[in-house]
Length: 134
Image 1 (tube, rainbow, N blue to C red):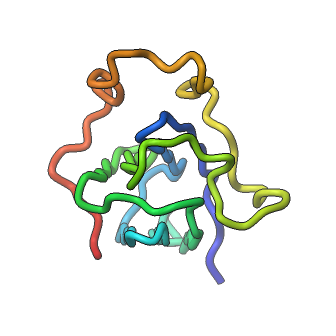
Image 2 (image 1 turned 180 degrees about the horizontal axis):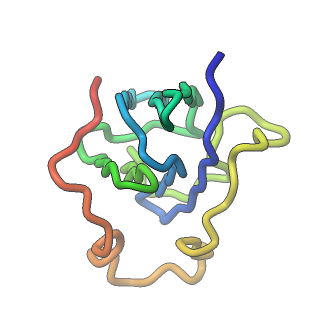
């Protein structure tokens, strides 16, 4: 049975930031579908413990403009929203979010505090050439 790694998220009007805290992730498999289906799996540690996330995001996304970066300590995703609008929550399902899902207060900006210069958002994150698999 797979475990769930800690997932942190934040948003802007056009983007969702998702960070999966999983040191030394191996065999990373990631999939993002236009309808907002988000799937992640990997193994970690000497015992190759399996981790998995399978969630439905609140709304549709632009798969072609979304990016991912696999680091030594975490996996970061920059998910482009299909429409430039603020989401009420990350997940489509209402109610209490799963315990592994947390707000990324380091990246969080309130809707009325969003910077005018959106081109610099995510500039400090290296996403390389990694893309989502459809």
